[in-house]
Image (cartoon, rainbow, N blue to C red; front, side):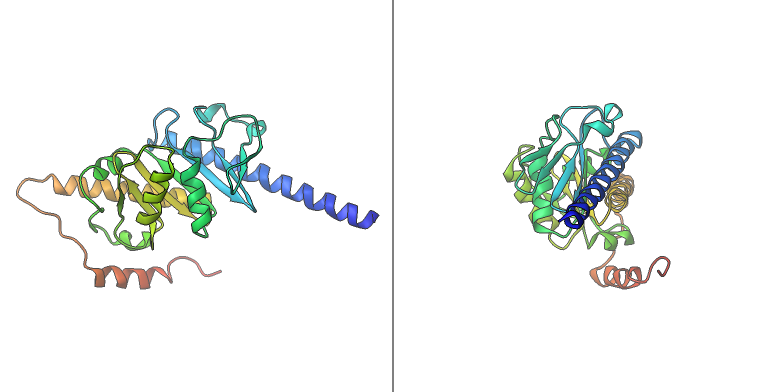
Length: 229
C-alpha cells in the first residue's frame, strides 16, 4: 500500500510539473503572438493539451499579466477544473479541434493579412509552395459569431485535411503537435496571405499559382525535410 501511495504521489507530481511547464510555454506563445503583431490587445487565444486536460488562455486578460499561478484548465467537455480566471470565449473552437483531430496545440489569431484575405476569397490561392506544408490550399470557413458552436463547426469543415484555416472576417486557426509547430504554421499562413495580397495588387498582372501536381511534389519532398533523428 505504501509503495502504491508513493507511486501515485510521484505520478501526480510529474503531472503537475508537466502542466506547469505547458502553461509556461502557452503564455510564452501567447505573448509572442502579440509581440509579432498577430493579435492586438487581448484578441486571439492559445491552447495546449496535456493528457485529458486543455490549458487555455483566459478571457480578456493581457498576456503580460499572466503568471504561473494563473493556470486555466478544462476537460474535453469544457468543464473548468483548474483556475479562477474564465477561459477564452473561443473555448468551443479549441475543444472542437481536440475532439476531432490528433492536435496537441492550437493557436488562433486576428493576423492582419490573413484576416484581409478571409474577406476576399473562399480559399487562399496557392501562390507559394509552402501551401503544401499546411495540407493544401487553405480554406476560408464561413462567418459565424465568435465563441459559438456554429463557428467551431465551420472551422472543422475548413480544416479537413489541413492544419490551418482562415475564419471569414475574423482571423486564423492553426494546430500542431506542439505549440511551436502551431505557431509556426500560423506565421507561415500570415506570410503567404501577405505574399498573395502584395502580388495581386500589382496593376495589369495576375499572380501565377501552383498546380495540385506541383503541390503534391512539394508534399513528397517535405516528408524528408529537416534533420534525421
